[in-house]
Length: 179
Image 1 (cartoon, rainbow, N blue to C red):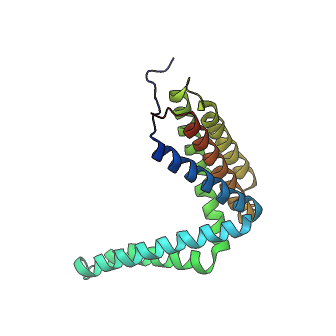
Image 2: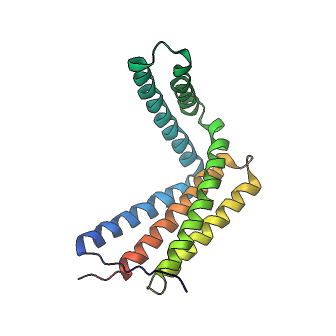
Image 3: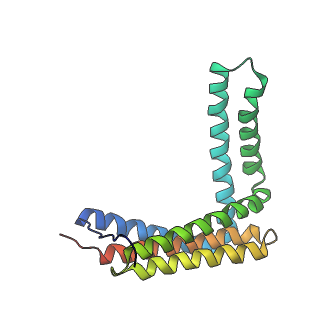
């Protein structure tokens, strides 16, 4: 079969924290399913703020060390402009976010399936397998409707993915051995 196996051991504190995280992921996912356009806007704005912060930090580093080279200012400039575009025009960024999510869901699905095979025959491994298969299915669904459905599908699919991540974590936590 596979060349290695994984045993999951958790003390009570780690198990409790894992269950709390799983429940929070599921709640966040439910919000994403109930308000998909809101989650899409929040994700776009959040990524915009991250890009803006990265641009400011890159600009500061450029100012400190490479300020005489005009080409060195290109990266900070692009990061700031892209960040501001996502912050002030989050719907326009939703299509781009959609492409990134397609790649994310494909990778998440591949790694979840691989991890589930390593967990087998432990109890709960099937949930991780199901999570991986669902992630790949979500990527395919998103790819078929992109870019026309990006405004609401980003939030919906992220919501579904968060719920399944929470369920998989919860099942693993409940099936882990506790000393």
